[in-house]
Length: 266
Image (tube, rainbow, N blue to C red; front, side):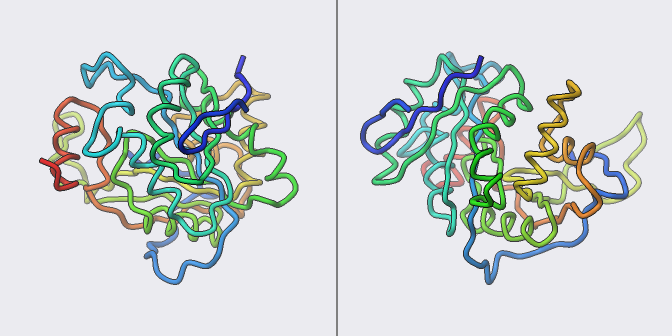
């Protein structure tokens, strides 16, 4: 069972590849990050993974990266995004105290809710949406952005652009051209390929409705957009927001060194 969310402040802790698309959910255009209007958004940062492939003895989002743990970089950046009224970090239940200690020094006077995640990415997202549900249902939050805490170099402009695009179209995902050669069953791909990153942002009411229906049906998507694809109405379209390869995901041991180099730390 998911525990109650904890309210995290600085400096102390208190209780408290592109999915296939149907005709109704499709990439509609590429957008930049300029002229982003004021927003009433929530950002969910997922940190309930592990450090198995990195070879670490702890959750990889707690590994040091420059002046802060990996997860703290995403949280600090997200807190700079205009119009964000709620911030949630989803963690493994056993990591709650360690995450609190890692994040508290980097929050200043801001508040972050720490939520226990589930056994899968989908269940962790659903845990966060249940916490946000009262504000979504009353219209206090109109867009939710979900970000992988293992992508510490996503910029505030990228968060803002995906949120703005989601408000206009119903959903938005960052995309980047794949430059490494790929082959399918020995044959080269038929054309240019793009990779999908996070943060992925969606109209909050549609997202909550999709995950509620998924819970009723026992469905789990491979990522946030997959659940929208299955349950969203025809008004939800997915906009492609340009990103870069610098928004890397820390998966293997060498990725930490690469991220440090990109930060100018190495």
